[in-house]
Image (cartoon, rainbow, N blue to C red; front, side, top):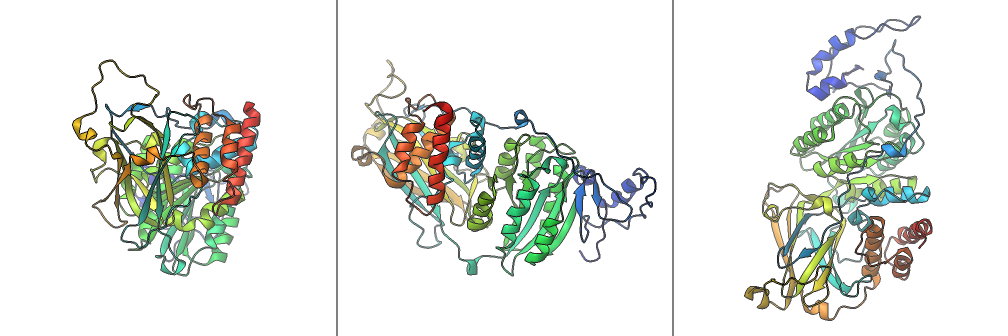
Length: 550
């Protein structure tokens, strides 16, 4: 990496896989310099990636070399109708007799909550496709017991309560909590900031907020960590070689400006290449992509980008995506790319959220403690007649995927929490689906285990492992008989779940509205270590209620 000079390296080269040595020929064909400007000198032999001491991406060129000019940033009008979401239908009710097994991948993303907050604080209801209830629930911390040691990287907590919105159903909660990691025991981190500095990022809630977010993370580095900075607009280039000098990182960030088209695929290729060149064996190797997701040059097809990310994750380099901005925001791309990159997705709508994600939750964001985590619940039809999973629609797996270690699933970071809630109907109770005339009675095996309402199984791999481990836990039928209205943490989690489902237009909420949600959450909003965020939830719920009229 020594002696690298600036090269206006071809994004096209990275996208189509052409060799870096082709860059000089491509540059030689560039249009002549404007009148009165010196002609650019012949480029030196191309290094593995373009770099410069100080560099800003503007237009479709990399500015910084003598003789190169660029257009000033241009403010781009945004159209809310251009935002892209990949919403799924609300999970359907399942008849336990026909489908006793539910399988899904864990999800630690929180982007949908912050994005919903952005809509509500601007006086708009979020699109239903933008709301993922599991990300709303997982935005908050709950009082789950911490692991006693690292032999099992997370604890499993289960509890049951009566549903606040349906007198005939119960809520079954599954909570996972990963172990926390002290600063002294953190492994070294090789982090590549991959920043979109195209014209679409030229807005106060985009590139300036990216700089704030990543400057905050730079201040959390330890002496054994390194950061590199890659930027992309019409082309991709390196702004900063690996360093742990916080001042140098912040200077490089502050020098950036926005303009031009968006060759996101080229940026991703280059970022992974740099991460590979500086790979830390036994450490954290992660690319952090900050963008509005509006890729419009080169490899811009979502499916093709996902395929590229899937190939890269096997190298041991993970991908976190940070979404910014509005109007042209491509949330569908951001969320899917993070899932396939064995990372997490967050939406940054303000400086406080930047501090939360990349400051307070940095360990969770960067340090994986368990990977390919899957949950499978088998309900006993003699005890539970019907059920539905609240959220996780885009994380559903086939039953046979659970035992297949080749099937990718979600990862858990240090200190992460994951909550899943099922709504269930006891056998003999009135469910959503009427009894069938020709339905068989539960099998003898189910009748013989009336003490068991469900069996929960979890599979996970250690960060450096290829073979999964199994955890199995039974939910006793007695928890249904003794269940009361949800209290404390459970009540707040139920309120957030209801908030998400109501925003999604869930027709099985039995008229439970924002006023009911506020009442359920208010008594429990001051508990836990995230009191500020819980109080904010109450305000957001009230805002939604005022727009909907209750």
